Figure 1 (cartoon, rainbow, N blue to C red):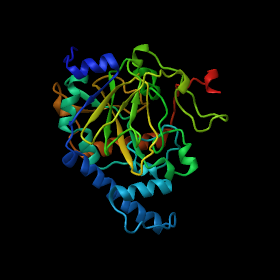
Figure 2: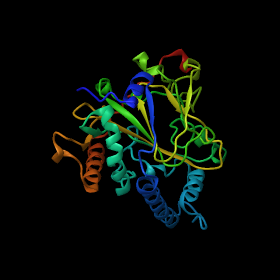
Figure 3: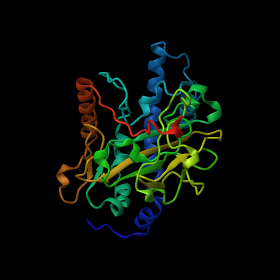
Figure 4: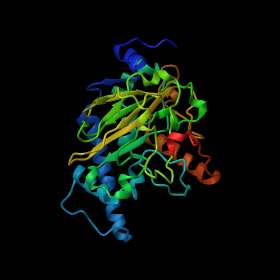
Length: 329
């Protein structure tokens, strides 16, 4: 398949990243996702209070300010209600919490977004099931255990390459990360940082697992990351495209405001997803349009089937940690 040789496609191939400005409409595409999350949060707060799990109704707070305060207070405890991914290392239950709601589905298959991705993936675009929600309150407001948590969904995200989170079967899959800011991302509140051309090494760097000597660290040791680093500020409506092998991280949120983004994964159709039993689903197909997910119910049922299968059969996780590397100890 010959892809369009656009400026952004060339930049992704040469540098390992590219920034596309004003792809999404903040009011039409982003705000519905914000509103949906806040609606879910308000129902969750009422439920948790009725169950005696929290004792705060957060009266007087609304919108992103409410989300900021709730995540600052509760950290990872209820974060799954906002996550569009199920951890492979969890113990599956019949009612695993997950963020499956219509506005998120609409964002995943947004026409303007998919139009912008054809230059990288071709006319048949599949949605890989590996996505990460990142809702980061000011670091100073977080409990110590959350600041030290190695996953980086709420606090600083350490250096890593996204291929680390895929099975070997996806080594040759044309998969990209589409980084979508829901709020403004800048150097003060924790935007992305990349090492240009680091994807040209063609392999995974050392990735350390949390250990007894360093419980809060997971990722590439800073001392082997090049000092040639570029920060990538972005506004709602922009998207950042990352090669699966580029080294990247996010800065600590040193502001007084919430920083919120999504790591979405898209791939060329009919290639391995590298996510266990979880298969990619088609968001766009010029060759077979009838195979595309068109309704929220299709997406919801897709995840319901995955949850049930993983509950019935258990999970087999995988790791690309460099378990014996001296740098990790």
